[in-house]
Figure 1 (cartoon, one colour):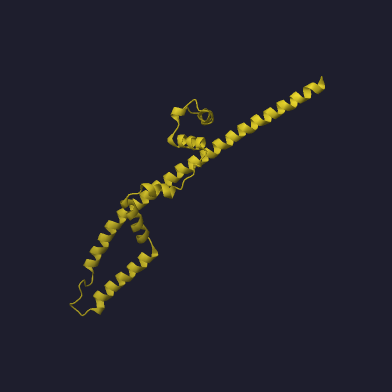
Figure 2 (cartoon, rainbow, N blue to C red):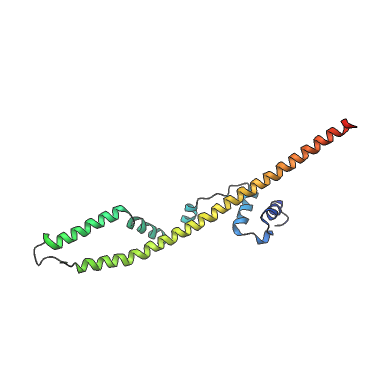
Length: 173
């Protein structure tokens, strides 16, 4: 690893021995050596490792956190209360006021929905950390490439100056 000029270059710029490089730094060096881009979409990378439970939690959170769900649920509650308060004949209401069964269903929904939404939030936090790592890789790649180009330009300028000095010496003699 240390014999690779790219690794020696990176070790000089990053300030670490090749064995001490992080996984992200090694991945960037490998991509530079392969002359391939390092940028990846965090959403795609996260979706590749998502389990069925992760995808289900995301869908439940997307539905449960939408205006459509809120409005639909409000209409369902209003319908429930109207049906059990005045539309059905007295004594035929299946959940009369104070709507004990409705209260039980709402509590159950909240008890199930809250942890599922928290799972989705945890997954989103994981995606955010992944995006930050991928951004770091892109930034590191960019910085290393700029420094490498800077070195190449410095060598070219130094060679050109030496050439000009060499050309001027015979004329001065």
